[in-house]
Image (tube, rainbow, N blue to C red; front, side):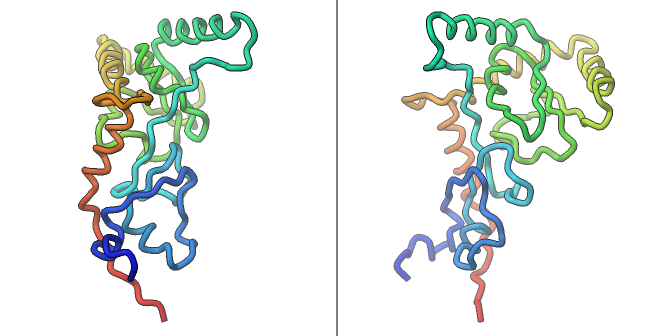
Length: 209
């Protein structure tokens, strides 16, 4: 009764941030929050904690940054090594469920992300903005290294890799988190996705006996 803006849409024009995601087993007072409001999660989202048509995930914060505890010039050498590896590699492997914080940096340096996964990837960052099938490669883990190699060899047929790399470099602008938001960076892309989902289906209020 005290929140007229919530009651107007039962929370359909609200959002909340939860890296772990809220489960349906939550207290009954959170049912409308979970079903109606947009959940902003961290990728990857735990199983069953993400609604593809409604929720979104945050672009990861790249970890190729200064290491505050590294003495002397070790930080500089580490940064140069990481950048050189990204810049000289055609593909960068990312395993589903593991750390993918470097995916934006991989795109920026023209390293095509290879997502090793056995599930439909419906919670990738910026799904409303990017055509992931055009900037990344998806391969199952069941076939091992041979399957990965076969898929990558097929991907590079007829110079398709170069086109994929160029699109990835262009897409990388959306993965930057800036102290002061800049056009097309991660902050603006998240806000844009929230705007796109402002007409999320509203579920009726549940009456509890």
